[in-house]
Length: 582
Image 1 (spheres, one colour):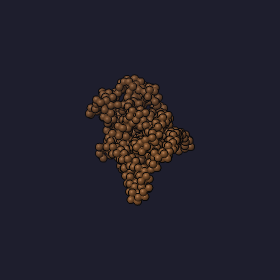
Image 2 (tube, helix red, strand yellow):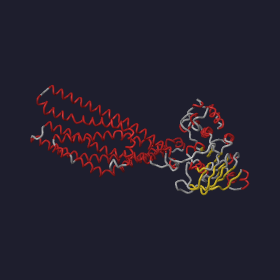
Image 3 (cartoon, one colour):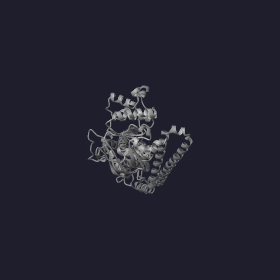
Image 4 (cartoon, helix red, strand yellow):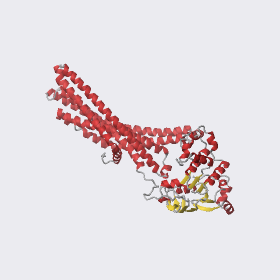
C-alpha cells in the first residue's frame, strides 16, 4: 500500500507538520552522514591501486587521516541527526498523548462504561510508545537506507556499469516478497497488539482488585487466567516474529545468491584486465553497503506494519464521535438558575438493549426535595444520568428551567448540576485538593463550612497533616463512608442549582446519614435535590417520594400517602432489605 495513500501515515504526517523544521535539520544531517558513507571505499581503491604499489608513506598518512575525518564526520552527523529526531519524536508523542487524553475527556459515558480501563491505558501508553519507539528510529533509518542506496548505486555505476546491472534485478525481488508477506505481517501485527491489550486489561483489573482476590482466595485461579492470556500473547508475538524472520530469510537468501554471482563475474573481469583489484574491492565494499540498506528495507517494512497497527488503534479513539455532543449554538443556563426539571415522554435503553425507561414523565418544581425509590433495575440511576446528560434520551426530552438540556453547553450544565454517585471518586491528592475540585476558587471558609455539612470534622482532626493529608489512590486512606462524605463536601463547595445524590450516603450508618442529609437539606434549601436511595427510612426529610418501576412512575406522594395506598412503596417499606439500584 502506498505510504502516500495510507490514512495512518497521512495522519502521522499531519502530526509531524508543526515540527517540520527540526525534521528538515535531522534529514539534512542524515543525508550528510550517508554521503560520508560513500567516501572510504574510494580511499581504499586509491590505497590499493596507487599508494601501496608506490610505498608512499606521506600518501599513506594522508589516506589514514582521510579515513579518520570521514568516520568522525559520519558518526557526528548521524548521531546529531538521530538526537534531534528523537527529541522531535518525544515532543510528538507528548502531543499525541495529550490529544488522546482530551479526546477521552470528550467521549461520553457509553464509551467509558463499556471500555475496560486497561484497554484505554494500553492505547494511551503502549500504542503511543510504539509510535515513539518505531517512529523515532524508522524515519532516519528509512532515509539513511534510501540515500545510501541512491548514492551507492550511482558510484557503482561509475566503477563498473555491467556489475551494477547484475545488482539491480535484486531490488524488485524485495517488492515481490513484500506483496507475498504483506497480509501475513499485518494480521500477525494486529493479533500481537490485540493480545497485548487483553493482557494489559487483565493486569489492570487484577491489580485494582487484588485485596478482594485475596479475600476470595482466588489467587490460583487468577494466576491461571493470566497464564492463559500471557500464553496467547506469547504465541501471537512468536508468530509475528516467525513471519518477519521468514520474510527476512527468504529475501536475504536471494541476496546471498546474487552476491556469489557478482563476486564471480567481478573476479573474471580482474583476470581479463577490465577491472583493477582496488576497483573490485571498492565495488565489493559498495555492494555490501548496498545490501545493508536493502536488508534494512525488510526491517523497515516489518516496523511499518507494527507502526500502522499502533496508529490505527490510536485513530480508532481519536476519530470516535462522542454520543453526547454540544451544538455550536449551545446556550447558557440563565443566572440565577431556578432548578426546575421536567422529563417529557422519555424513553431510553443502553446500547440498544431492553428499554430502561419508556414514556417517562416527571416534573420537579424549583427547590423541591425528591426521593427516588424502586427495586433494582427499575431505572432510578438512569433518571439521574439523563438529567446530568451522561447519556442522551432515545426519545422525549429533559428540560431544566424550560430549556432542553441538549441545547445547553455541557460545561454550563455540569457547573449548575452536581451528580454524586454511590462509588465516591477521589484522587491521589490531598483532602484540600479533592474538595477544591468542586470549586477551585473556594475560600478556606467555604471549605470549613463544607466539612461541617458533610460531618467530617472528626476526620479532619484525625488526619496527620489535616487539610494537606494525601488520601491515597482512589481515596484508599479513608473508609467507604468517609470517601462518600468527602465527595459530598466537594458538592457543597460547587454550590449547584440541582443536586443529584445517587446512593451517595449508602456507606454511612443511619445516625450519620440523618445528620448529613439534614445538613444538606438546610444548606440547599432553595436548590432542587433528587435523592436516590434503597433505604426507605432515610426519606423522611424529602418533600415528595417518586416510586419507579419497570421504567415508569408507578406512584408518587408523601410518605404517609404512599404507605396508606398499600402499593409498591408500602411493600418496599415493609421489606427488610431492598437491593441497591445499578
